[in-house]
Image (cartoon, rainbow, N blue to C red; front, side, top):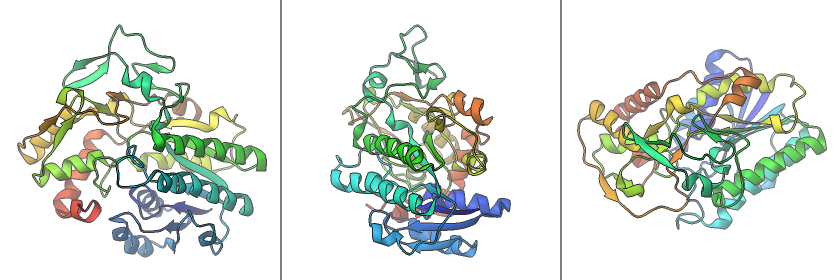
Length: 358
């Protein structure tokens, strides 16, 4: 199988490529990257050593794709992954749309030309913000949890947000680019008879993730704690009780292998699936701070009561559909992910300067 991974020198793309080269999958791996993300250059040499054929190009520029060889599948791991993108003053809204949506259109045209399948790595942030922001919660062990007797909106339970949950705006500009990319991918698949899957991922984390508060919170928090950098609990009363689930990208490989195989006759709806660590992996910032204290020693965390745009108290994905359709469940625990990040931080004390320069 010849596979093109976009964003191959990013955290997720490089992790998937490493996993396949280590398992002896036999896949021929190609990678496309524009090396615009700080830290991405650090992955280039190792990927080449492992036999991944790298192409320097920008998926926003259609002519950059003209010299790419034909492939059987494209795995789209290239995106600006920040929910604050386009509104934080660091990137413009036009840059966000060009990258996350325009790039998807160009890759879909590439797939159409080469009769290639397409797997979009999407996000939990396609789900509506308003009902999640208004979710009634209580606090348990330093973390928000849905209130036991609360009235849950449709598509949400104590197990998390499932694929039937509302995607009505507002979902952030970032979420909108990913949701629109999903719709286009599915339409291209149906119109041109291409196999297409949309994998909505929870928070992806692991060693080598670029440490930015808006894009790689687990890596950022642990590296910043170890370096004794200033940290803040932002919004929600400055409690640090806000919760996210956690998934290592290597846990995606088994389901990707199934999706790359001759596909079953799935409905369009069943081609959109949540993949995340779920409730078992969920962690609040305060709980992560307790883990860091045990691993690195005590460190003060300030409070900032100012709410951030698009923030929500509890975001956990329900992956029952992935279990039913693909017999999938995550295998790498949150504790193992945190220790992997911590070991990487020990070995690379300069990581925040490399991957998230001020």
